[in-house]
Image 1 (cartoon, helix red, strand yellow):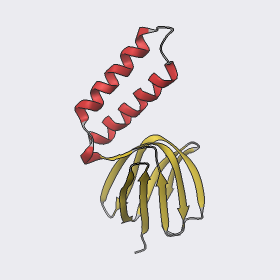
Image 2 (cartoon, one colour):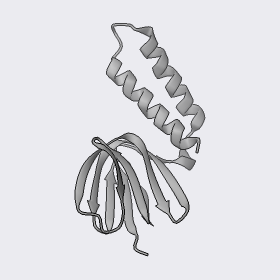
Image 3 (cartoon, one colour):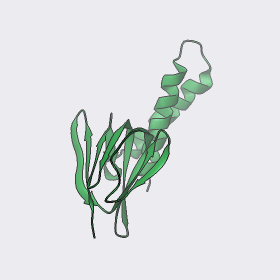
Length: 132
């Protein structure tokens, strides 16, 4: 069976280099499933989980935006940050979520609401992937 070579890279260096049967990402336009032989494409990604499938096994990564480049036999994800489920500190992510929620509930004029909302999305994404 054909596979896709998948490379996930952040400014800190490579996070993942492996082959998979299928990859599912959440692009700005919606969820995209990529199989070997997919047409070339470049898509901006949302803060979300990337699902990497090999047979009956699924591996997840928490990514914080970025871009995905698809070639028929290779997928490259350039992300601001990416973490494997096994590397996520769930307690720290929970604390970040609670901090962001407190900032949003405070309703103060001096907080950057957009920044707090993004922090909440990142924390919830890390929790969802880390608690698999």
